[in-house]
Image 1 (cartoon, protein in one colour):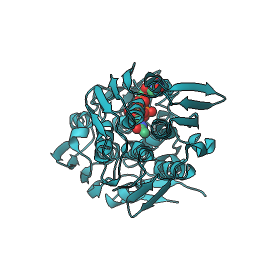
Image 2: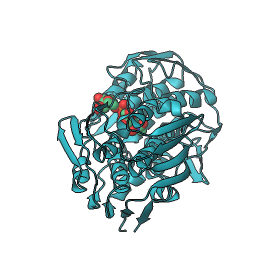
Image 3: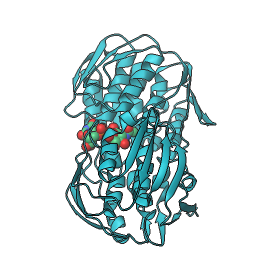
Image 4: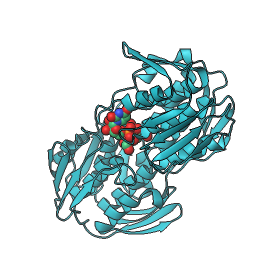
Length: 417
Ligand code: UD1
């Protein structure tokens, strides 16, 4: 099926939208359901491709998962770890999250290396190292990871780098069974706090998330219930970048400002006025954005790498020159070639992009090659002269639930053909 977004730029945005639960929170939460034999309901779940891939993985191992009216119901009572399919785990990076929970519940796991990614190498050595620290015997051969967890117990894990995924995987691996797991130099992202809250809600014992030392006390079993995850700070940030580019005023509900301070600070310095509420922001952007001298991606609470492409799109039409440094992923500037097709003036050297703002971008035929890079093309198209046609929409659909409807609700002229 041909799938393109057609965006006619030049309309100011105005209105109210609400973002759903965070993709990067819900994905590990779904994997975490493997730890329990009871039914779990995850509310406010977005209908996006990455979630459907994770649902497929749960079903492929004999679990039950259904997304209906925004509530995802998962029941892994009959899960069988010997069924993990290489086809599925090979297509989605987040499949690595099933490793920790499968191991914790069944003392054994055999999965293929997780799917590739357009933004960099993304190794999983820290995940494997963490499991080994818990006494798991890991053998890697022919693209598969075989884990023997018969002697799994607690342990101390000192991460070389505060990897989000490795921290989450190790938390889940330690949540069931005897022993205490201590993760040092843990990632401090809000999604880690959400995972701690989820495990504790199910009856687990995790503390310290949000700091760099997390302690997980194993318990014998976890239960079920209804859980509402945190809102999507990256989706909210993307729509704020859209307003900053196109101009206008919008109330963006659903995500917490305390999860977005680094992004709010940059947008304010670019000239946006932002009021903060408990679960939302009101953003006003008048006139052309101002360039900020330097934006550097860092682990939380620094500027998130998942907002780097969208803020670069804003810089590309700002008044002045800004510099963007990508510290997290080595290939995360590919989308800039597409922005340049729209008239952006961006020079990329290794992990640095120098962005000389232009007065006007112009519509062009461009291709999304990864999720957030695709979102950046949408943001730029909103302020471009004329029509932008975006191919590769499947990448955008991985993380945004019908982006054309959300931008349309703010008055943008966006159609999917
Ligand atoms: C998660 C997010 C992703 C976000 C990233 C950084 C999810 C589903 N995805 O990805 O959207 O961009 O955090 O905020 O939550 N690394 C290693 N070895 C490992 C693991 C990671 O070297 O075993 C490196 C990576 O290559 C990368 C850095 O650590 O350079 C950060 O990766 P990590 O924090 O693990 O990101 P993900 O969990 O993959």
